[in-house]
Amino acid sequence: MRQLTYVEAGQVAWRDAPDPEAADPRGAIVRPLAVARCDLDPIMAGFGIFPGPFAVGHETVAEIVAVGDDVEDRSVGDRVLVPFQVSCGSCVACRDGRFAACHTYRAKAGAAFGFGEAGGGHGGAVADLLAVPHADHLLIAAPANLSAAALCTLPDNVTDGYRAVAPQLASRPGAEVLVVGGAAASIGLYAVAAAIACGAGGVRYADTDAGRCEAATALGAEVTQLDGPWPRRLDRAPIVVENTADVDGLACALRSTDDYGTCTSVAIHFAPTTPMPLLELYTKGITYHLSRADSRRFLPEVVDLAASGALDPLAVPTTIVPWDQADEAWLEPATKLVIERA
Image 1 (cartoon, rainbow, N blue to C red):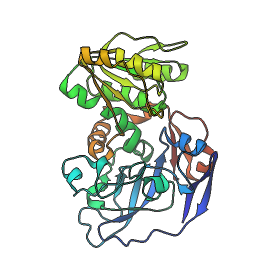
Image 2: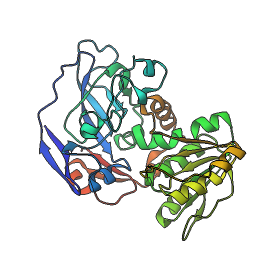
Image 3: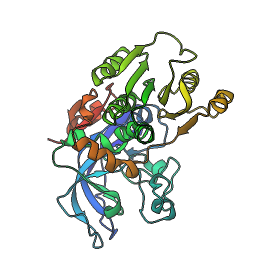
Image 4: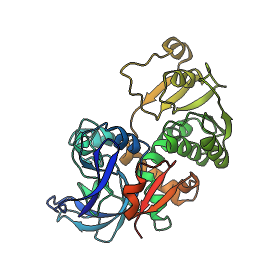
């Protein structure tokens, strides 16, 4: 088969690889139909964060082409979404709904497709075929009323934006949401869209980039375009999404969180230590949460929201290119890039 392969920093190329074997009786082989580029993918491929070579891509909708003998709920021909994190569904963590912390599958970067050995060596989605373990647990049925281009965005970045606002709005219906920054370009915009879809009383968006601000306005947010360093704080909101990947931006987002509010980081802070206004968090009773999105946990909710029409992932600026042009497009600028088969 052919797969798009990260070769070295700044280089991806099509390479031939052996077809995956259907050796797992509980697994399936799928044929990716469309793959979305995660906001982290250009950084991974551009700067060589993880050792290569490895097949890229971890946001995908696919068609099942083979299933193991023990698979009961999935069949050849089904169109399915593949959560980007690999989990078994039966260990202690999975039984508790903590699928991203699965005890069966461990890896340096967390068990996932499209991260090479750092993700456990599970293969990448920009490929003719992809082996998926524990198919009955892992694969999510794809609704018929959504296009492949829309569906493939859901497993990671849309889910990431959703988990930063939806549980918080469920506990505080009608609350205001503030999204600060656009380091993960699509995730912040998906958070805006998800907050509106989940009934936020208002959504504010603050960023330095004119294009992202324009997109946030089109989604329905009240936008503040900043020029220069991050301010000490913005007008406070009970639900804040921090998407700056910047020490001063993080401090701004935390100080912009209202008393007993929640601030969730969706950007990755690579610095080993980051100064935080801990005394202010303490005195105001603020909850700060940072983690990867738990794809298998939240994806079914995201699928239902998108299928209902309340959330349109393609409302976020999306560049769709043919499958064979993936090698040319993978490192090119785009708020959201989708690679789609004809």
